Length: 289
Length: 288
Image 1 (cartoon, each protein chain N blue to C red):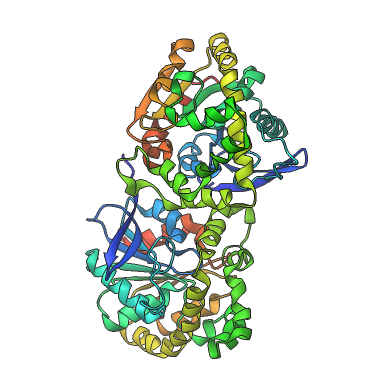
Image 2 (image 1 turned 45 degrees about the vertical axis):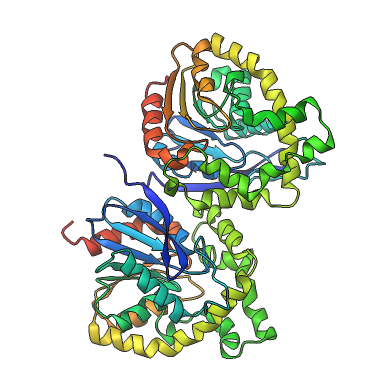
């Protein structure tokens, strides 16, 4: 059987279509890959074939992102709690009993919420620039933090520039020393989704709700401390949003956490998928089933 | 073993930045991959993954396509002949001395125009859903025929839908075996690029120019008959543009051509890149 064949499917959770990529043998240990902003499961396209030789890989798109449904922002509550609720429904629908999660950016607060709610299901956590500590937040968050402090129309509108093609490309290229490694279809597909009608408003709602993630950091820390879940941090050390101290901080609550840095930016998988893939395979091999 | 990385670069050819994907060791056999509508070099992304350890691979976007510059219509004629001149110079500037060529769709006419000028340039030919014979024109091309004969507002209506999501899906999904195998990234990215301002006019200019390819077909057939080049044909048989009859016509004139048929769409690599990669390796590296 071809192990690298990827299937592209949709399932319905509470009336909304959730798109996901699936690869690998169905009876192999499961790895759930959760994407970040402003991308989709597309960001895992090159990692999936590396992992799927040994693992059953599942990479969904969050509601509002990629090929999953994106209901209008006035008729759907775009909060991280709500995005997590649909991911929980997705996990339950697929009948996933035990799995490792890999989280990046927005995938981290969603994945950590899932882990807190289902500690018995989580075999391990891979965080690729997926933050859970205040010391990981860079100055780049200031305009968003200002909107948290004063949720005015003006402060909301000031964030609209974060969803333009220029900013999306900036996110991909900042901190990358060899820019010729970044595939243009990454930021162009992201922009296609961001440019859809009113998707910008969805993103502004989520920028606002990101404050709830920071508020939950102590809850995540408590879960780490109590569960001592195996954790691998693979971190682009020139990420303009999530700083290396955010990766090191996992060790405060998880002394056995493995932390590896890579000389790249936020979207570390665009430039270092083979190196990061090797680290992940080594880590996954140590997990209890 | 460290896997070969894929690079995304540009090179200036006559003032136009030509974007290209590049992978593999330069000491390996050279393979240039050529495609046009609807998704330019991104059509080859998975195939490049499959072949990057064994070949030096280069896949350019034609001027006006994908991530290459889009020269102004006033400064650049969007014709197959003109694009073939750009790509010929690109081949020389890239130091591709005697490349093998993989031609898909529009890539065929570009390849044969270059080969007509420089019959010894290409080493072996891999043709995939790319046509050189009248009998190889499928229903989607017959539908476009009135436009190719006489371009005006009414006939443009026949072909403009090719640039919409529905039209792009004709290339990706029409005739595909299982849609769950087809990565939706591909057709939405194609839509993103084809929806850019000015694209419709450029793409219609070039599609209208396809009539000159049909005029050139007999010349390229003569080339095939006389030169008897080494050819691998890999074909999505349910293609509505260039169906299996296109491959069979080539095989009639070049009996040694090796034909492999796939139960899929025009963009056969979407469902069968792994199988096609195996055929390419066997064809270009017979010792294995």
